[in-house]
Amino acid sequence: MEIVKLGRTDLEVTKLSLGGLFMSDLVGDYEKSRIATQYALDTGVRLIDTAPSYFNSETVLGNILKSYKGKNKPLISTKLGMPEPWNPKSKRDIFASVENSMEKLGIDHIDILFVHEPERHIQMDWWNNEITYDGPVMECLEELKANGTIRYTGVAGTCTHELAKIMDTGKFDCVLTAFNYSLLWREAEYEILPVAKEHNMGVICGSPLQQGALAVRRDEIIENGAPWISKPRKDQFKALYKLLDETGIDIIEMSMRFVISNPIVHCVLTGSRSKEEFISNWNAIEKGPLPADILARLDVIRDMVPFRPSNEQYILPWDDNYHGIGWLH
Image (cartoon, rainbow, N blue to C red):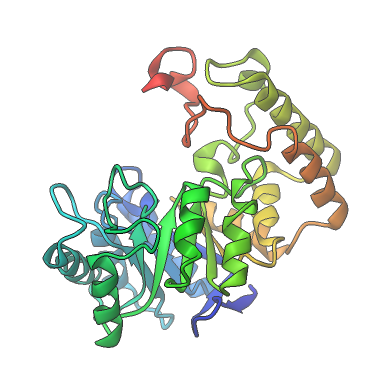
């Protein structure tokens, strides 16, 4: 597995890293997560990302690392935020979030601390000034960095235009962008990736499989339609499936290799819930970037729906909900 320097940091990461959401009891099984995570570390994975808001992911990961007997000590990234209620403008709450995370993870420092969803000011009001992006959080990050509690800072979010403005301040070392850089969802190309390149930020991509939308083929659902599927998106899925058939590349391999084909992207996260899922993703990344002719065809498919339709959710409502009204909620 290729190892790369993460932007302007001195951290070296493998192109494939681990995302911690699927380790939590909310969506994962502890024993399967432990086996998958420890196997990934033995294989060479360098970075694991988690967050306080990922249910009990930090606690699960801390227990997994505590029981790990191998030699590969991973880099850990997590995010600011505590279960409600907490005040994002309270220094005491911010410092408490960091202390709680380190205690749960069983670590004495955090390699990358992300401000979680700093662009969603209605949900999490971080900033005193949304032009300069100043606030107590920046003072806390500076202090935490100065005393060695954290090594690097970052922003992690999903709203591309708003997130790019915060990145463009040059105050952050890394960006974790989720749900907006994959085979069919490319909004990060317009602003996030160019701004990251300009500031030499480390770029980590989450949700390369769009929380399942690109994990398996759903030809029947796409053909028959679902309440949330617009005609352009339906046609786009069909075009993608046709390309998969013609190239003989399965959807997971195509998805994973696409993300690392962009040299601006340093690593991609896999939320593997089992050893088998991790091996599938690892094997895909090991094959390297996609050939130029396939990337060109994917660009044509991208252009069929260059922006997310207004009624389309970040996590698409497959399976049990797609026939009913559950997709609206």
